[in-house]
Image (cartoon, rainbow, N blue to C red; front, side, top):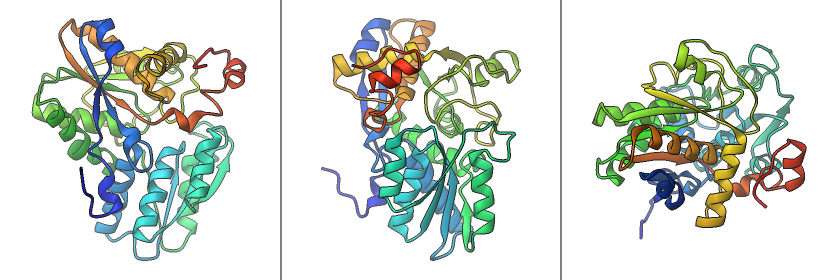
Amino acid sequence: MTIAANSLDLIGNTPLVLLKGPSEATGCEIWGKCEYANPGGSVKDRAALYIVRDAEANGSLRPGGTIVEGTAGNTGIGLALVGNALGYKTIIVMPDNQSAEKMATIRALGAELVLVPPAPFANPGHFVHTSRRIAEETDNAIWANQFDNIANRKAHIFGTAEEIWDQMDGRIDGFTCAAGTGGTIAGTGLGLKAKRADIVVALTDPHGAGLYNYYQCGELKPEGSSVAEGIGQNRITANLDGAPIDTQFRISDAEGLAVVRQLLDEEGLCLGLSSGINVAGAMALARQLGPGKRIATMLCDSGFRYLSTLYNPEWLASKGLGGPT
């Protein structure tokens, strides 16, 4: 058994699981990093801890201070837990179209939750800009700025990549995941390529995001839409800047949902849509690289965080989707 000196030591060192169905379908080994095993239930715990520790180290976050952030939810949950453990208050700004489970969790953790209507990034009312203004107006507060604070991707350079490399005994041919802030794919990609430059790093992009076209033809051009929460980006954030992307795939919600359903029905894994999109991307990368390769991806969070949406037949029907039943 692993013994932790404190709750923050529980962040990271998540298990890696072989995904039987996707592996058999592609003739490759496809491995999923079980980020739902973090104490806050998602990969975003890693960035939350690094961002807070970095702010403490540079003196911007002082005792009794407040952490403010704009988020689709998971980073807010991670920041609230880290803040509680270290004695900080937390204010979280979220679009009001995210899952009710995330909102309830943030409130249950004691954070102040500010909901705003969804808006384009160019709109001053966007959740990121709103959170920045609140931080500026709050005494002894920091703005976590997860999109452009590269402490985010450092969490994956020095944490996630090292773990995957060790867990796979250095025998890894490819890594892929979607981008929200860009911290996970950029940081993990940079960390893995520092180990071996020929590891293929692939972006798996949902519809509605512009990065697929950016890495394919140099133009930030979004196409279609997605109901996936926390992924999809239409600008090059500081965390994405310099990301070592070798190839890219675009995955539809329907394809991601089919993978979610398969993993639940056949392997007992209850996951969110971003995880289904990531695994579908890993399967696409496997087919591109050919049989016998070993590929890792991120299982970002649990499906239990989306019972009112992804696992609700009425909600799915309202979005024109079938899904887990």
